[in-house]
Each structure stands twice: as C-alpha cells, then as structure tokens.
Figure 1 (cartoon, rainbow, N blue to C red):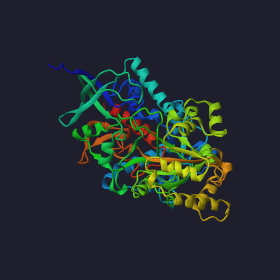
Figure 2: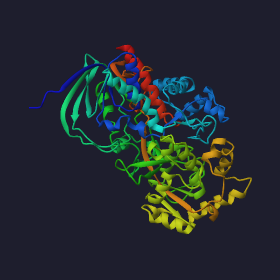
Figure 3: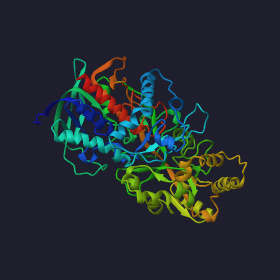
Figure 4: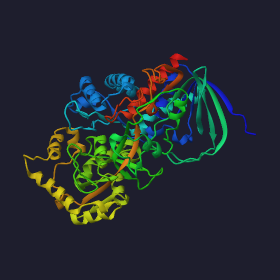
Length: 556
C-alpha cells in the first residue's frame, strides 16, 4: 500500500526556483508572508536558467548609455519594442499592456532597484538585435544591452541570499525534488498543488537527475505561483509548437537549456483552468555550436557574434541583407529554414574572432562572471582569442581553422553536411566581399554598416573589428564555423493580467493562481510578441516575478 502523501500548508506556494520564482518569493517574504518553494531538481540548480545566462539587461536612457554618447528615450524604445513585437492577435491584449509596463520599468525603476540589491553593470553597452530595416521595423535603434557584472550568477545572488536568509529564519521552506503533477482546485479556486517526491540526487547543476518516485506530497496555499520556465529542453514540444511561418522544424537541433526545462507545468496549469496563448511564438538562435564539454544532452552554446563574419548558407550562398550576424535572429532563422538544411556557416579571420566572438553563458565568460578586472582586460583587449573561444577553436567539432581558402573549404566539406557546400560559390562570395573593402563607395551593405558601427565607441573598443580583407594572410588564419539551430526561449505561455493573476479562456481570473517568468511568456502570456529585443528575458523574469510576488502577498 502506498504511503500517504506528506501535507503542508503555507501562505504562498512558488513552483520553480528560477529567477522569477526567487524574486517573487523574496518579495512575498518581505511583505510578511510564509512561502514554500518546490522544484523537481536537486538544490544544486537553485536559480534555474538565469544562473547560466550572460546576464544581459535592457535599460532605456541609462547612465551607462549616456556616458557612451547614446541618446535613448521611452518613445524610441516603445517604437522599437512594438515594431519588433508585431502584436496582431486578440489575445495580445494583456501582452501589449505588459509591454507598456515593462518599458516604464526599464526606463525608470529597474536599474535603481537592482543597484539597491548590489548589482552592477559593465560600462560598455552592447548593441544586440540591430535590425537593419526601417525605423518602425524590427531591431534596437540604439545599443541597450547592459551586461551584468557577475553575469547570470550575479543577478541570481542577491535574491538567493534573501530567500536563504528567510529559510534560515523559518519564514520560507525550500523543497527540492518535489515535482508538481497537479494543481488542486476547490470550488473553482486553485488551493495549492500535489505531486511526486523524487529520490535524492547528487547531480551537479544542469546535469540530468533521476525521476525515481519515492513518495507523494500535497501543499495547501492561499496563492500559488507557476514559475517553472518554458519548453526549450523538450524538443518534442518545440516541434509540436513550431510555427509554419518559420518553415519546417529542423531535424537536428542543439539544446540551449537544461533538459529539465520541459514545459510540464504548462499542461498542468491548463488543466487547472489557465489559458495558454501564443504557444507558436518562440525564440531560437541560429549561431549554435556543439559544446565540446557538455553538461546536458545535445548541449549547445550560442556565439554572440560581432557584425563582421561572412554568413553563408549550407550551400555557400551569402545570406541576404540585412541578415548579418547580430541583426535579426528570427528573420535569419526563417530564411535558413527555406534552404532545406539545418546548418549554416560563418567565414572569418583571426582578427575578427579576436575582436568579435563572445560565447553566451556565465560559464563561458569567467572574466565577467568572476568579476576579474585583470582577466577582463586580457581577454577583451589583449591579443588572441579569449580563452573560452580558443578552447572551442582547439576542441570544438564545429570549427575549421586553416591558412588558405582552399584548405578551409576542404575542411568545411569534411564535416557532416559539408557535401552540400559549393566550393566555387564560397570562393565567389568571399572574394567579392573582400574586393569591396578598398572601395570607399561600396555597395556592400554589410561593409557600409561595419564602417558606421565603428562610429559608436563601444563597437570600436570591443565589438567590431576594423574592416579588412578576410583573405589577406596578415589577418589569418582563416576560420569557418558550422552553425546549428539552438533551442532557447518560449515567447508564449500562461495568460496573465498586470498583477500576474492567471486568466481563464473566458477572460476571467483563475482565483488563487499566478504565473511569472517564461511560463507566462515573461508577462501576460507573451510580452515580446513575435520577436525579442535581447536583454529582456532575464529582465522579464525580474519584472514579472516582482509583480506577482507583491500581488500575491497583497491578496492573501
């Protein structure tokens, strides 16, 4: 006979201990509430996906921007956000309101609030998702990507500290290895959750843990928050929700998040009455490379590229304007899905990789993550590729490094899928591009953009190499990188109002149920619309978690 489930009661229940959950819990505890946090993983994973992140944050008209000579405004940010989002559905009503609220947060309170938590920012502002279309089209009109000093762990740390202090004082309980399988509903109100207790696990952060069930639990709560993340670790769900507008889903993809990001709580929430919207909106990168030292299955790392590499499809044809590195992630993904191949290529020089290649993730940036100023100067301003990048050049299966173009093409063709490459086309594209370098009146839009980008001090210092001939041996060796689709974020999720309360399909509030973070599409069920401006995923977890935590505490 199965043992009876363990039972608990609390003011507030938080399901998922990623950044949104930690922020919500810290806010609720500060308001005097007792909180229980449950998660299916071992405690080594406290902080969730945010711990692994690069820690980029979207601010509007920040002191860092002003010091770099960047003129920004709430009006310009709104133009960019809504031009990027492309809201066009009836169910975008709450996401639109969340977008307006988030823009105000990013313009006013966000930076000061984080500074009060002890979080600092790298002084050079990055320019992600540059767009390259018209003023009202996708992309950031100005640099807005603020890198956290300490990257993802630096953002998680103060909220983890607040949660653990509350735990030590008895105001909060953390229950690892508790997998929710049901939200309990009584009289139409969500009153808590029930599920399985999993066997203890010593698995390290991000590594797979067992799913052996050793018990059951029930928790009764005055309000329950779902902050369990999205679907990026579950390729079956990614393919099920893949939108026709992005072509056919890739046969082969890398995974940019741990396997526990499985989307299981979305279905559980729907069963309890929550309305799931915009499930076909998702954010996957096209600059993924296989991790030579993987943590989870099919572990991929994203290259955060500067704008100089020549981007070729699997056959060797150059991608069309404005699909240059770092300009339009989903536009590039949609184009590449029309080629019939799951991979593409960067072709570049040693000078470009030294200046422009950064790898996404806290573990790939030991200088910023470790707040090591000396290492930062060496890796970002010194000669040679940064240490983590050099490790991929030396050990990564997707890198080809050669002295001549003939040797480089032969190395590209030797990799899986390389037989699709037209050697003469590669030569034609790279030589034609190089010819334009000495032309002050170039018609090559990428080269014109490179010259323009270097007018911005941040690009000139650490992000954009001086335009040069890739094939000039003085700039070598030559490098090719095979790029894969890398799963990452869900842009849809549980529909919520501006308090984070879950909305039912009929538009009414689901009593007792809240959602935050990626599970809620970072707010409202899809605050980004179809596309994200970067620096807004971690920020969306902060804002939605804070909003929901405060609202739950006020309501209970």
